[in-house]
Length: 58
Image 1 (cartoon, one colour):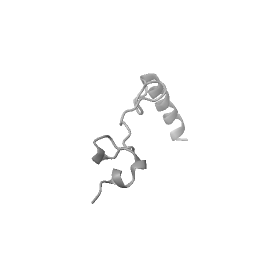
Image 2 (cartoon, one colour):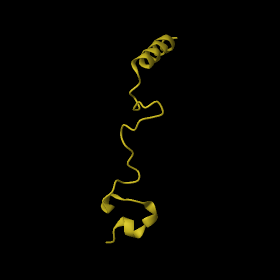
Image 3 (cartoon, one colour):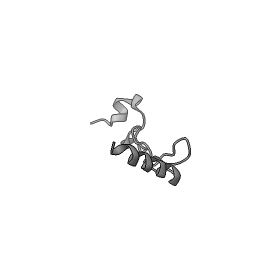
């Protein structure tokens, strides 16, 4: 059976080609502010908690 990268070379690097797969995204890639997703600074986390507390129980 031929390897997938030999059958469809336009797909890019597949796991059998020795490189990372195209669809594998780094798990903690930094966003625009340089913070990883889900890793907000403490002040933004406090604001989010206050807003959640304020509007959750209306």
